[in-house]
Image 1 (tube, rainbow, N blue to C red):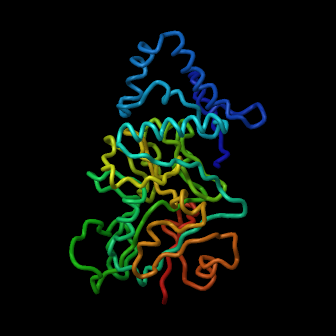
Image 2 (image 1 turned 60 degrees about the vertical axis):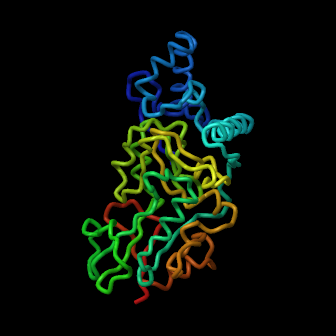
Image 3 (image 1 turned 30 degrees about the vertical axis):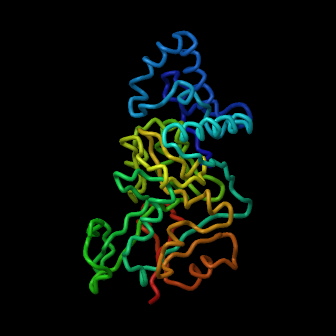
Length: 325
């Protein structure tokens, strides 16, 4: 969780109002209650019309959904009601019966990822696995992973190519998959005007899809191009939907919101591995608990020549790259 609070914008909208009652986020509370008060004054139909400019990206957003309390403020019973509603909406919209869970971080766990660039062959099976696991829109072919084909001897990401379509690997190239770096100092979190994104105790940066307003500030702030915006309602055939879903991870996202890699938290918080790692045919990917000195990722960090992307920016990624030699 970020823990950062910014001063109010001064417009009495309640955004980022500093907490004053034992840590409860008054900014989130006041913003939502202001909208509820407006709804009560105008009536449901008039309120929905008044909110149209704000929710225009979310064509299917109901007033109830728009007024939903922030994830971090939901009680256990409220969250259960929200999950039930989302499961019913998925069945109505996509014809699939899904199981949406809310898997919380484990104590004593901080996730880290490492990638061996010496043996990555650029096959992009990781991106395909991400696409399928996370219920991405099939038409766009979206994935949280971009694989760059790089010239050997260069680390300039801007010169990498993601649209290669020839056989791989090429002898004069190496391949660099890039995804969310789960930064210690995530700039995407700092710029969100409504605190729809934050860092969890296990290091994963998440998004409350029902709170995101689609301003895309986080997309502009991310130096790793790891944020995705849903321009249209995702199209996923019923038979292709991954029915095991997480509230903060791979449930089907609404139109008009930002989304990102969550290290497959619906899997990893249950002791499983990320889908991209399981799909890698060369074993280039290493995942584990950075707080466990016996974990494989700690062994990599201790014994390999490790680096992070754009270290000079001070984001302190928890995603590491290394070469065998």
